[in-house]
Length: 424
Image 1: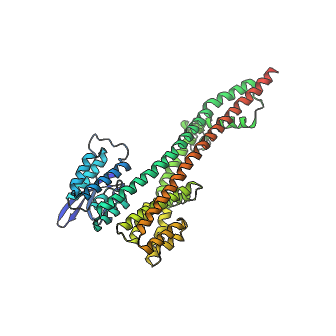
Image 2: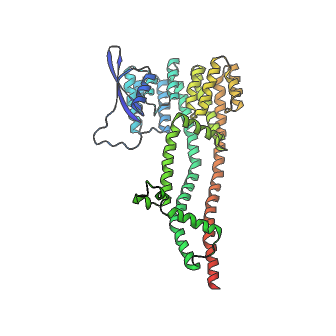
Image 3: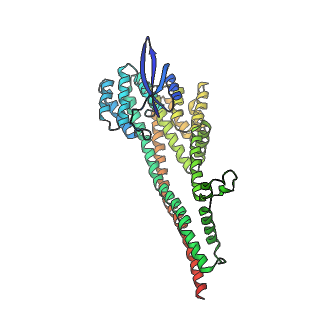
């Protein structure tokens, strides 16, 4: 993300402002969404000697604390500029401090709080901004901020559980890959030389041992790219081991895959694949249902219309497949179809969500009922994630043990046989 400054007209006066966006075009588009017509937009110049490493971020925990404390001060009748100034002095995050100072400046300039939040999309999501806007228009900003803090906290808890469940398998998998390449490139060639010295070039070795030696020779051998006429004249290419080549190609593949996933088509296909994955797909669906229920509940409780709530919630669930389905449902709801019935017929939402929503439509308590649905599916997701962690850990140990056992059998068996032959 980059910081951009802009100039716009407010009546007969020029007004300066700033916004964070990926590119200048994205900054202009974001401003137009806020009904701001910029006369000039340019990137903020970095001070000489200043070094920016990585993208500045605001932790979810800091955002939760900020939201709760702002809600408390608003409930107590503290003016927004003073409340924001107090929070700015309290936060330990330098980047977040700058963001809050920018919010304070915008509020003192007469901008609504939601519009001030919208200028920092990397910190405040679209759901966050829309809920604050609904709270301002409905005069219930303090209550909305409390709902937002709970929602952000729930999202942070789920993310933490997923990261915790996947940390051990990722570490084991990484160690296994590094150990595999280390063994194949360093240890196995020496073992192959021992076999050759003991039994000669025609020594009879088990199939799995020969396979291990072939893999090792291929990975340690010169790059297969030297067979390509355009590349065989490059000394580096000719002497590049195949193992290094495969690692480089794999990294290049990951970079291009990541770029493709960021496109509209790529994101849709990737999210569709995630939903269809065994076991993990079910976990993702439960998390999406919980996020949909809590977000939609909060928006409805804030007085947002059903169509606007569907639009915002679709962008908040984090899955393009679900977002497109909610857009199609919104069209049918606009034509007079009940929302609950559409969710019952959905391919991705469990029927209970549509049934509970139908009850909410009949009783006028959609927000209260959906909160219970969100609590239920969050508990379901937590249970499945904990179960996955307890299943994946022993599976990874078995895989690592099998790899070590295969290598040991490939080495020790032939050595024992060759030793007997030499003894005889």
